[in-house]
Length: 305
Image (cartoon, rainbow, N blue to C red; front, side, top):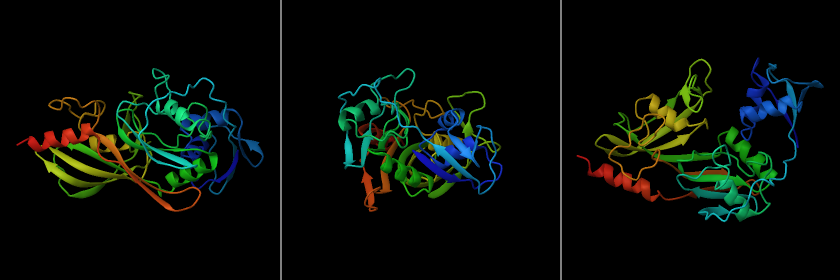
């Protein structure tokens, strides 16, 4: 598949540009395509550190996916909340990894989707992530959308880019937030020394914005709803940790778990997805209820005096 893109920011690195305008590509995936000589401008192959001129046209060739022969379809139960010939929306449980990775070769959402959907999954994101448009963390529960064909994938990726695909989360955070609603606008980048973590970085970070609203207040904790304006890795977790209110149970960003038996990981749930259907253009809104672990946390919080 060939796509033509136009640069907007003068002096931006081409690998960064590609990963931002094509959300289905990670920075490392964009760099691999560049190293393979698949990006051109003015007839010349671009290197990953090439800096663009504003308005410059970039032609990128995305290779056809390799058959995922090494990925086994697995009959893992799925909580399907919406499905048609183009997209599927699944309520992912806590503990399920989205796609195979070192240490998690199977038992993933991708393995389950391959069994459920057969070969009808988009190949844009490569053989390891067929159909996957966006991700949520292993220990975050809730809604995730997958594309069943490349046209749907491109449409959903564009909606992620222009923020018309709305992702709404609920979380329990430590402490009491002073206001009833607000926004956290802090740039996020990879942690300088702990590479599996993200961090607020005012010099090298990418712009990130999280809108939040208080749903319930408890003694020492707050139940909030979050709307993502951007989709940086660990965004909600990093943002609330940065303002001194880490997500309850978050083992990476300082959220305490003591006093909440049965809480495995952060108390964070992707509760709703709103998107424009890739084929019909109609607005689709998918909502799922809070899982049992989250409801149990709220009950426990309400018992504190």
